[in-house]
Amino acid sequence: MNGHGSQPYGGTPPLTGSLSHTYVNELNSHNHGVQDQDPAIKYRAPLVAYQKHQEERHAIEDNLLESYSSLVIAYREKFAECTREKRNAAMWQKQHGILEKALEHSHRALEHTEMELQSIRSATDSDPFAFVIIDGDGAVFHEDLIARGEEGGAEAAHQLQKEIKDFLHQHGLDTDLIFVQVILNLEGLNKALLSTNTVKSSDPNILAKFGRGFGRAQSLFSFIDVGFGKEQADNKVRKIYESMEKNSHCKCIIFGGCHDNGYAAFLEPFRSQKTCLLETTPTAAEFRKFNFTRLNFDNVFRSEPLLTKPVPPPPGFGLTPFPPPAARVTSPVTETAPKSTTPAGNEPGVVAIRTHKKEDSDGPPPPSNNTYAAIGKLGTTGAQTIDISKTKKTSPNRPYLLLNSKNQRVDIPLPKVDYNAAKSLEEKKAKNGTNFCNKYHLTQTCTQEHCKYTHGPRLVGPELLALKHKTRGLQCSGGLQCRDVFCTLGHHCQTPANCSYGDQDCRLSNNHAELDITPTLRVYDDGMRELIQ
Image (cartoon, rainbow, N blue to C red; front, top):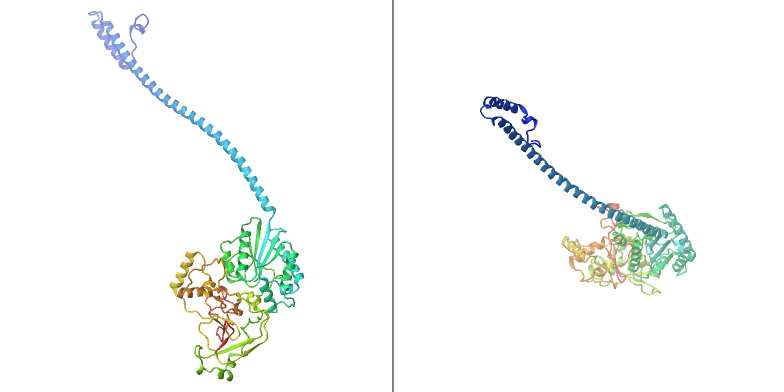
């Protein structure tokens, strides 16, 4: 309706659609017939139309209200989402700022760390040096150099310095800092060189003079005497190597101890890439497993073991060669000790022989040690004679060694080892964390105050036999020339003619083909000899 209370559109509400037109036509037709009867009839149709219009309007309003409510809900959801995003954006912006600051700080810290590392690297690389550690008991200088005393020592030092520098240059390390330490038993080696006539000199202190010239010629070279005892040199070599291996300034370690299998077990945990092996005499079998760089200085060191030369026998230990086996049983011997009258305690077919010699001016030597030192302690013996006298009763418990027809050491056969005993020995070793001390358990001669190997209750029975077998697998540096009655190491392969390991893998492969392991002579600790017929 308008402001005057009249119907819009000329008093008749607009009707849309076919239904509205039909309805109006019917209403008008009806009204035309009755309007003369009731004057209000003419208002009824507009009223009905108005009511229909109102219903449609209400429907539209309801629809608009519903749509509006939906829009309000959607708006509120989007508003909340927008608010959250704004809050998140603000939070991420703040985190981004924090991270940028942290990253900037990290960059500065990294730059500072790199500068420190560079400084440390520069400091480390500024003073690189090489260290040469040599066990002089096995790596022996050339005899012609030693024979010239101080002059020879100086020449050996200069030549060694030159060859080491050439080697380092080839491997990319140019440095003038080369430390060389030769660790040895000076007195023992000196006696060995002179007594075997390896060094032809009348000067009894020739090796000391050589060492003096060696140290004077190069200020960083040392000739260190540790005295008698194999462990003295070994321990010093090991300790020096350990300290140099941990030193970051030390770029190369040249280790001169390949003649001794004992060092192989020591080097096993290190496997350091800066370690090089100096090979002089034939390398011990245990060193084959290492892939270290190997080098040799043949112009400075001997390539043959010292014990390959003839060795004078110790006091009461005559080693004068006996006649061939076919000529040994002569009538005097047969008359002295006939088989039918062998005294109690002697084996049948054994002839006892005692050798006599002039007294050694140096007095009795200390016990042998299975290295050149065993020779150096012997001194120069006088002429020897063999006295074949009445057979002396011998005790089966007395220690002795065996020699073949060529005067070569033959190992005493051992009974077969029990598997359970060998296993028990290995379990005890693993529990203790170290090997058993061979000297303590086998010869009862260990005198080391702080021995690093296991002592404790002495092994007996099958376990002791298992330890003997295990020790027999280690090669004695004296080889076939060893004359130490108490030596427990191996001197040859037990089956040289048909060894199942072959020449390459057998630890005791020396003289595989030509070695005769048939014993012909038994030599006791007091020098008494017995022919084995």
